Structure formats: C-alpha cells, structure tokens
Length: 142
Image 1 (tube, rainbow, N blue to C red):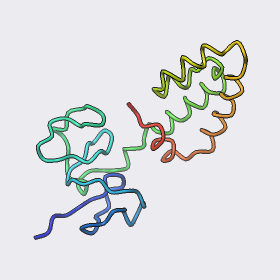
Image 2 (cartoon, helix red, strand yellow; image 1 turned 30 degrees about the horizontal axis):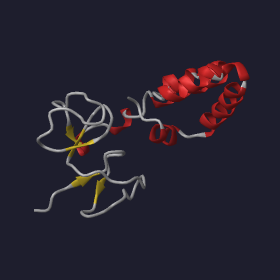
Image 3 (cartoon, rainbow, N blue to C red; image 1 turned 90 degrees about the vertical axis):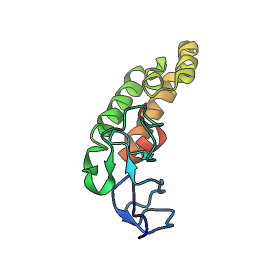
C-alpha cells in the first residue's frame, strides 16, 4: 500500500510524488504528521518540532486534525506589525516585533534622520496590503 501524503498547510490529501498541493498551491513538505502549532512536516522519530521547538507528542496525521486553527493568530500578528510600523516605525519597533533585531537596531541608530519613520510608514502600507498567508510566509512566527 502506498504511503498517504497530506499538505501541511491545508490538510488536503495529495498524490504521491507531487511537489505542490492541488488545493492551496503551496509547496509540499514530506511527512505524514505535522506540528499542530506551526504546521511543519514531521518525521516519525522527531520528539520536537525543528521549526517552532515545541513538543510533538500531540502531533497527528493531517487528515485527523482541524487545520483551520493554524492561522488564528496570524491576522492579529499582522495587525500589531501594521500598528507598530505606523506609530513607532521610526524607532524600528515593528522590526523588533517581527524578530529582525539587526534592522531594529539600524532603525534606532538613524531615527534622528526621520528616514526610518518614512520607511516605517511605507512598510505599514505594505503589511496592510499583504494577505495573512503572504505575511506569515515572509515573517514566520518564532
């Protein structure tokens, strides 16, 4: 019997050897199980997720888990990033929030020039026009 594969993003059953999910068109990750916290594909011998570091004892096959919970907080993460970029973008608060510490420090060093404030406003608009999926792909939760 052939091994069943499931998309770790949407939970859809995928044909063997496929590179992309037919439902959500995202690249497939191998593995029958996935992390219930971040959706990363897991191997049988894994004790914790390599992406988010959480224990995978509760990991289940994709077909048995409700995949709709994966993006629950993604909209609020994006909203916080938008507000930080708009209100405190000149200080790089949004960069620190998104885990880009080096850029945050750079924004702080040049905040007196108001250039980071202008860039922060532009980035707030960019974050606003992104979908949650695009935002999560570019700025994964840590």
